[in-house]
Image (tube, rainbow, N blue to C red; front, side, top):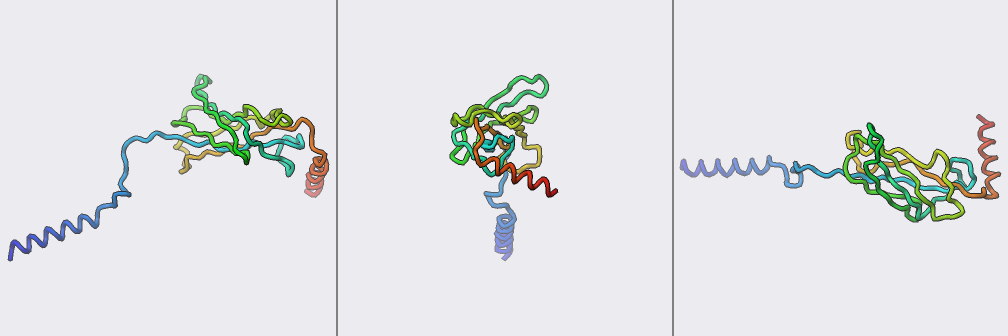
Length: 171
């Protein structure tokens, strides 16, 4: 009888151990992971030459954008990554590793639209923070929209600008 009780006790302890163990999918991989980020933003055409996005603004497919990172101490360029916008004017540039001790920014390089290829001053670069120590759970980092301006404003822009003026008069 005693060997049967010991056997039942051993089986019960094994069952309890299996129930208390976390599932294999919940186990933690302690190997160091290589961190990487996706810098996402959009490139627009300032069809009204206002310096900001308006209802007449369009997004540019095929624009070339670069993400540059520079040392905070020396200012020397440490790395650069390039990409192009898709049909919606959105770019997604994969950037390898952490860049906690660097200043990184998205920078306009070129526009395939010859009628909208002049850089909007102040909208040619946007800072991005490429570190996982900032409380953001995702590896996607959003950059402010970058812009080129049309050589000549569209005819309907006068009406759009009047709409903004009317709005300011009401405030």
